[in-house]
Image (cartoon, rainbow, N blue to C red):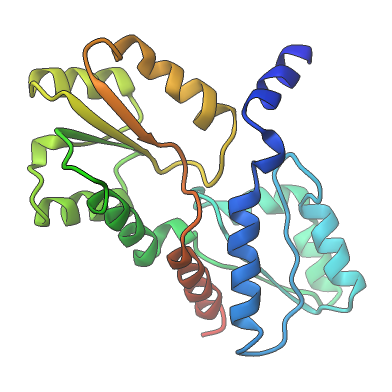
Length: 230
């Protein structure tokens, strides 16, 4: 526990959710121009958790609850169903809806393309830390359209194999983009950077460690919310 406490302290854990809170605040302000809503937020492993947020919504008299999936995980309904008695609450008149993952929205992918292209120079190699999905492939294809070659962009969660590919390409300046995590945490701030350390003498490595904040995420969130009302 003391070791974990030191790790969390080193990454400034109190700021872990600041980007998510900023997106949530901007989303709230935007949607209140559309129609009145109650807004709640939940964190995995933090307070308030999903149970607290759902209980607050029910206490406030909400009969329809929309879960906005601001994660990489596309099976959020299954996860929430393990925490909340969805069927029991539904039988009591509470209607639950689940948005698609914000990660799947085209505005999400375009945000990363813009971030990369707006960086001060072109990279020899780009590692998209993710599985091959529609989103990661969309980012890759857009970068290719903007001048990168297919061999310069690798989509994988296997860092060692990716660096082997870049070595064979004789690439030196590498950018990795962590598409898996929305905010800073042990993986994004400690584990993943440490995985690149053994390559630091051979490559110059820069990272986009997590999603961070961008106004286009707000637009993506609004998109997925409005789709639940169609």
